[in-house]
Amino acid sequence: MEALRQKTDEELATLVQGKNEEAFGVLMNRYLPKLLRYGRKFLAADAPIEDVVQEAFIRVYQNIRSFDASRPFSPWIYRIAHNLFANALRHDSRHPLIAVDLDTLSAHTAYEIDPAGDEEREQAKAMVDRGLAALTPAYREVIILYYLEHLSYQEIAEVLQVPVGTVGIRLHRAREALRKHVEGT
Amino acid sequence: MLKEPDIQEKILAKIRLGSVPMHSRAYFIFRAALAGAAALLVLAGALFVLSFLFFSVHESGVGYLLEFGEHGIRAFAVLFPWTSLLLFVVFILILEMLVRRFEFSYRFPLLRIFLWILIIGIAGSMLIGFTPLHASLLSAADKDELPLLGPWYEQVHDSHVEQGVYRGDITAVAPAYFVISHNDTDNDSDEGTWSIVPPTGFSTGTIAVGEKAYVAGQLKNGIVYAYGIHIVSDSE
Image (cartoon, rainbow over all chains, first blue to last red; front, side):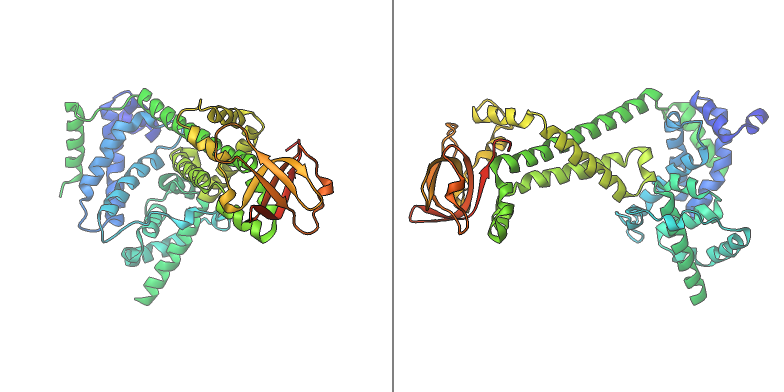
């Protein structure tokens, strides 16, 4: 078991592809707290988050052989969770998702490279705690993945299946919306 | 509320019981192949429909109406094969949805993918236009030898007389008028003989018997008073 814990996510995923249940247990240990945190921040407080996360891990196990171990595992598992969370939101009429996202229609090169510094991350984190619930799901999610889950632009793009430029513009707008909300309260 | 170890145990128990089957690699390859085949099929459909639209506009002569001024543009709008265009748009939208299923596609904005598909569609259709595909299918349709697509192709030869459009071979030329006649023995509705009075500035001295003419005008007392005439050259 200890030897398994030393392995990278991708190495574990390769073992799971060979039906190694212990390796899957280690992967769950690593990602269960992350996905629960992601779900709790993204979905409504009364949403059945544990059930959705459980479903996410079942999907991970079922579809693990579609994972390409030469690529990072983290965006792949977050992608599965994102799909299920988005479905849960769609079924919740209080938080409908927009069917067509205008941000994905055209390129947004101006925002493609916009790395946040440590200071900015800390400031944003403080704002997130105070105003996350006030954001729309699309903005809320990108903020969670960037500031709380520490995914890169490229990884977020893979999770949400949108161009990297769209991630940049959503983060920019989400930060603005968050700032306005926090300043207004 | 379930605690983290409980969730983990529950999932592992399900796996051990065999109630969570792991899909094989072949399953994913088959799904990807199916999606690829569907995308190719829809692309082929889009190319076929758009190339037919180009062929239909050219073969029916509707495109010449654009040379005939405001009247001609109005007639063009009425006679244009909008159904084919609509079908092409539907194919393109389906193709866009199918392409979005492929992982590479999300890296590009929707509009860019749409433009690529559109460019591929138009270029591919123009290439098909260089082949005798539609001409041979139309010929088969005229002989009632084309099941399913036959009625669709026969529209190309539909009569546009009601919209004031006439086409045929020039059978007689006089200083003030000429006569066109059309009979391609396919028993379609585009057959007939008409006397044409050309618009001001058109000299009948420039035309000869045997040439093909495409005419738009108003029928009054059995004579067509044309507002536009296009003499179809051999290369067309």
